[in-house]
Image 1 (cartoon, one colour):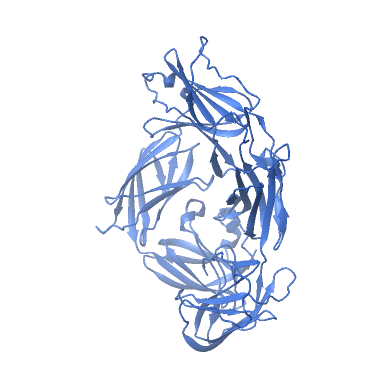
Image 2 (image 1 turned 120 degrees about the vertical axis):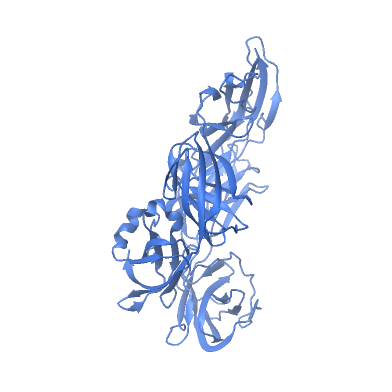
Length: 555
């Protein structure tokens, strides 16, 4: 069951038998939902936790109770149906029964169904906190602390940004309400005493054509620093959190001489050289942390003219791995170069290739003149995780520019299209296979996208030895899954083994149900391949509704 988990903590001091107010009363019936909440670490009962059930059909219908001294809870006079079971309390962030990612197992209530005597393990909050100091052990009061987690994101294992924090006046930071997992800490900051400041300053040039910019002992910068003191992400220390852990991660920042980048190019002459775009005054300097998170470096840019040439000098740059981009004055082109910068150097934007792709197109609704009000076209490279998109106007037209570092395949899909889906794609200036577009740096493509209406639904039951299986991961796998990941649908089987896969684009699929499969990289076709032979094939037609039985398979 897909369920949005609200990360809200209950304030301390709940009365043991007091029932919290409800948003809307549940219909009354003759059944019960009873059980016990326990600490997942040690198994001890948890008193005074707020426990709630929410109707899966009418999510504004909620009922609350509080666990007693032995952790037991009971909901009486419950009508037949399905209910999301959740618990929260002091030291225990809101979590659902058998929760995995954004899924959970709903409790099915009705004749012959088991909804009593449930055991509900709840994970205590974990946290990471620490202090930022400089080489003199003084507090670093300004900066940004980034928390990364190593886990599954859209079915792919990787390191993603989880949260951000700023240190207080004592240099202290804290990340609370963390789930068990593997984490990294990265710190971005500038020495308060550094000589340079962000902004553009014009200076005169001497007779040699070089700017008068004498170095200072205070011309320093902090490189991006990872716990526990590394400046290279490959040497960052992993923080492995278990439920309830309180981890201290102090980070000491050490200033290093700041680097200077001289931007000196014929592309910046006035008038511009033939065939070269007019480069804007300030280049963009970005760092990519763990291959996914991009952050701009806030250095200072000095500009001056000599011999009809515009010179730029970017200062205050700490050593590191960067992406340097040179946007054109009209914003339609970006020249981009990725490099390691360890010393002062000169950059020539004329020698950097155009990295932008330009995509224009039209969207038409097949068999209809009605156009949905909310329209968004999405492009995703499943190999490197690059995702971008744009809104479609009321005439069905769109245009965008986006930097592409190297050639790759991008799946085209729609978002918020009111039940419509991408049914056909043709391209001028680019190669299309099915719903996949091949893009290369500097390319220009015109698309014609056909949309159709009629998404399908698959309901089913996960079985093993003809008995329902709860908490299984159910995956709807399209043909050529590596090219059609936007068509994958997932759910988690409920207490009676049932599941629902909704908003399915018509086509041929295989439904697989995997017990203990929540740590699988399901976006990898090779990972799913062993399960397909025992899966249940289904061909979904427009607006089709299907009932199937899926065999529970072990990981």
